[in-house]
Image (cartoon, rainbow, N blue to C red; front, side, top):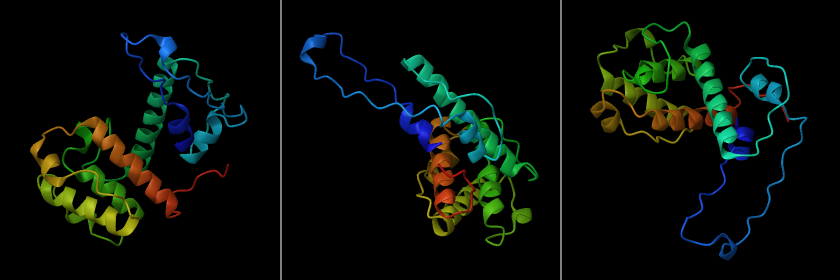
Length: 183
């Protein structure tokens, strides 16, 4: 996941009023060797894939790769929360609105932290507070989402949820709770 995030940054948008010749030349980024392929990325998520990783030459293709990383992370969330009641992850917005998906994901890695069966999907504030504070205390995951904002919005912003889940994933990897394939 980190590999894709570092490789797939789109080129800067050039201002149309500034002549291209007056802008400093960007250093070319070294492309990763083809040996690091999609299979290695999928193995990080516990799945398997075939075929080499695509080599991106333009921003449109880079955007597609970001989408595939996003989909892989969504699939990982689904796999981790599959057996949890009141959780059906289909996206990074409405699927997270009750806070139950956050709680289920945290409970998967820290089952002794709280009793998931006592949670109520209607008690959104309590669910968000429990999930975010537990993730911060046990996984050292920065609390990037504000409980008040999450409660205020009936459907959370997908980019905010996606960013938080990325941070949670990184924190769990650093703690050694998520197995990744060594580079």
